[in-house]
Image (cartoon, rainbow, N blue to C red; front, side, top):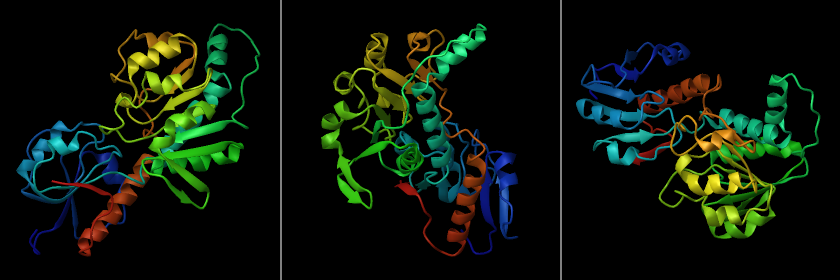
Length: 309
């Protein structure tokens, strides 16, 4: 960008503009939904729509940018669509709190039988029953990035034992973090398995028949990663047999078609990919954007860069 040009940031809607208060006067905010060519030839930071998919990234050929700032954590499929010469950052720090909250909600609802109580209540029935607590359970956390750490922080006050699995083995102040090579040894020891890994070639269909067979009967599986991390056919087979319990915020395909057999299973709880959809998103996205703007204006490198095309 030339020194005489204003520092431009394109936003896809007014909601994010409203949250971006306190910017310096030399920042120009323009609206661009990326449904067509860019309205100007140079934009310092382009913010794509939250759920617009990757095809819109092709519109970046119509503009010179310094940073493409996603509103999403995951960036599967982006590398194939991102035109050459772009720097792409994900939304680390934006969705961790919200996704961790939903994960805890899914776990607690499944453990304490909330869906059963709701079903009975809609029929005007009072049907008390005993259910497993979250306290005293062994939780296997598969994936230990920002969301995984946020989930762990919220789980520990519930008096659980959390075992961590990450791509590579290491240790921290809490002790051992196991590598993926230990996953199948750890699955039979868990009461609850929470999967929160990015979708990659290695993690596609990570949750397959072999994975599920290693889980004990009545174990709760929670997938808040991406739908294709699980093989839906294998998931349906084990859930239909009543051998495991399942809580999903993501599915494959997505959206799950109307009438899909997973919807009819009492041991399956499904939310429609709403991990990041809460009031926590907007202020955190605005905070990240303020940081990126300040960094680029100061000549510093942006944070959260995951791809350079």
